[in-house]
Structure formats: structure tokens, C-alpha cells
Length: 456
RNA sequence: GGAGAGAUGGCCGAGUCGGCUGAAGGCGCUCGCCUGCUAAGCGAGUGUGUGGUGAAAGCUGCACCGAGGGUUCGAAUCCCUCUCUCUCCGCCA
Image (cartoon, rainbow, N blue to C red):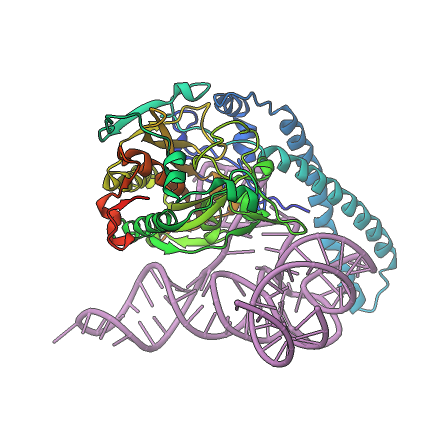
């Protein structure tokens, strides 16, 4: 049985598409999303905004369910009112020692009817829920329109791509030659797309995790957390992985639990169902977790090396902000992630994803792409997004303004700071030497017991 | 895994034999008074969501006492199931 909670919220981020103060909807208790009111009142605008993502969305069935729901709800509420009133009458009649049996008989039927109506209501609510939970976020007006990644637009480039006097090798070749990776044995232990590191490789992975966490906590003001690596389906629903992307997840047999695909899920859900004080915001967390992804549908892509694995390490940045500061905070979060690449001396570019390439939950996303010499391309190493109220609605994460009544949804943001496996790959490729050794960036040496170079 | 205890408003904490309890009391918070700062004191107010009505203040319906279901004219109060927390025992890192 689902319960509707209709929350009024200002959608400050949508000025381009909707008048301010329009409301969006959602449903709680494990099931929230767009406000029925916004959809109801702006059906075609919502359809149009969502269609820029490339998949056409028809809200006709939503409209029908919603109308039916309201009709039944009115009848149910009227009957419940009657029941409440008459029940009191029965009580006072009994108190006076008078007979109430005839109205009791009548109320028996009313009660039965109410139960019928309530059953229909919960069925319809479930149907509406299914529809609304499957609707993606509305893109921010500044997001470029486009159907696929070729429409993403370059924001900036940083650093110089290294030039080699020899043909740069891919990181998997270098790593295997150095004896720090062993993909063959990993596949024996588990299967394809799992990492196995040895020696300086394992150490490098760990060094990067510590370097990133130290930088974000000491210099960027994030609070370190170490969350569960397994989460329940409510958490997955809040952040938007469920119900739509189940096939991308590893699920534990016999449990309604899933391996985390990113620290975004457990960390964002830290405040699930809570009302934060305005004064606390922004709340900023950084967390290291391994990430587990089925990578369904990516067969044949990046089959070698560390780029695409079922398990990889990542240091994540997560923020909870007020609506009016979230885009400012997104820029800061992006800069925080970029800092890591700058200190590591890796060349990268920042792109803003177009509407067609935007993730389900995000209103706006920047990708950071690091230079990979062996392929001669920039590869994604971080993705920094503002989800506005999308996740907050689904997870019921709110804040209260000083001296104001009521609570509003926070904006949630997150970004990789960074994907560790891909950072290892980038370091190995960018710092490779003619003899196959790899020079370590100076900032990492303290984390590597002073080691300057990985060699055979 | 075995045996118990518990889950009430922002927090703590009452709810008697089911019926003006949306919920006593306290804390906290807000506003006002008082006080040469702070503290203390006095007075008033203070749950959420959704719907109707209204220009608004407001008035008003419904729902919510961990979740779901049942009994009943009527359930925070009784019954069942589940979840979570806590204590003890066992086992294990």
C-alpha cells in the first residue's frame, strides 16, 4: 500500500521551462518523484522537456490514472468523514444507554465500501508510482540539446598532453610487463573484468585513494565517510538506479540487497528521510568505496585493461545544498575533482553533457576526461552532476529554513573525485618511459614510501 | 542461531477496561514582556501531508502514533505478519 505525500516545492532551476513556483510532484515512502501537480498542470511541457533526452515520453496513461485516482479519493474521503461522525454518535448513544444497532448495521456497509475504495486507490497509486518513478529528471536550461555524446560541448582543457619519442603502450601491457596487474589470474578467481593488482600496483591504487581523500578532506572541506558497500532497494530507488536500471546492478541472492555501483548511493542516503537545518548546508561528504557494475550491454567495449571493470575503486564527492546555491556548488565540486588531476600532472578536458547523454537522475552533468596516450583520446574519469530535487524527492531529503515554516527539498550533487582505476591507468600511460618503467607523480611519492618510479 | 524488551510529534516521554487524544507533561524552538550584556523569570504560540473554500489571515474535510494486514460502527490502544533497535546466550571476524 502506497501513501501519497504531495509536497509543494519551488523549482527554481527550471525557469527556462516552467514559471517559477510551479510545483512538481512525487510520492514518498520509497516512492517519490515528479509532483503530480506539475505533471497535471503542465503535461505537454513536461513531455517536451523530457523528450529532449531522446526517448519519447507519453503521459497519457498517467493523466488517466490521476483523474481516476482523484475521483475515487473524493468518494472515499466523504465516506470516511461519515464514518467518523457516526462512530461518535454511536459512542454517545451507547453512553446514554440507547440502542444503536440500526446505524451500526448501516455503518457496517459503509465500512465495506470504504475498504473496496481503498483497495482501488492503492492499486492506482501503484500504477501512478510505476509511471512516475520511471520518469527521468528534467534537464537544466543550460544543458545543450543533442541526441548523443557528439553533442556534448567542451568547456575547457587543462594541461599538456605528453609527447613520446616512442609509441606509447597501453596501460595493461605496461602493467602486465611490470608485474603489477594480472588480469588472467583475476579471471580465474572470478571472471572477466575483475582487477588483480600486485606490489607497486596495489600500493599505487591505495596511495591514490589516500591522496584523494586527504586532499578533499583537508583542503576542500569534505567530511570523510566510509559507508556500507551493500545497500537496500529503497536506497537504490532514492538515487535513481531503481526501478529502471536493475540489470546494471549486482544483486545478492536471497536478499533485497545490492552491491553499490557508486558511493553516491550509500552516501546520498545518509540523510534519507531527514530534515536538515539550513545552517548545516552545504553538507559535503567524501567517501571511498569499491563500485560494482554489471556493465550489461557493454560487451566488446574496453575489454582490456582497467577502463571498464565489474569492480573498481572510486573516491566520491557528495553534497547536499539549498536550491539557490546548487549550481555554484556544482562548479566547486567540479573544481575539487579537477584539482586531483592537476596535482597528478595529467592533461584533461571538461565537457558538459547534452540532453541526450545526460543520466536518468541528473539535471546537469560535467564529465572530466583524462588524456590517454595509447588511445590518443580523452576518457571519462569523473562525472559531476546536479540532481536538483530529483533524488531528494525520491529519498525525502529536506531542509528547513531559519524562521520559516515547512521543509523544502534539498538539492543533491555528486561527482567522482576520482575513479581510481582509471587514474592508475592514466598515470601509467602518461608517465611511461621508453624502458617500460613508470615515473610516479611527486604528490604520490609520500604515499608510496618515497618510491619515484615503478620498474621491473 | 536461541531467549527477551521496545518502536508515539524536532527531542524526551505519558497514553487507563478500544470512543472529543493529533495525541498529557517536559525540553527545544518562535513571538512578546521583563532584565543595563549573558543567564534566569513571566505570557502566548509551536507536527506533517493532502484536498475544499478564501485576495489573504483563516475556516474546513481526509490521512498519519515503525510498516503491512485483520477484528470492530469505531484502534496509538486488541490480533497476525514484517522491519528495525536494544539486552542476554551461543557462534564468528
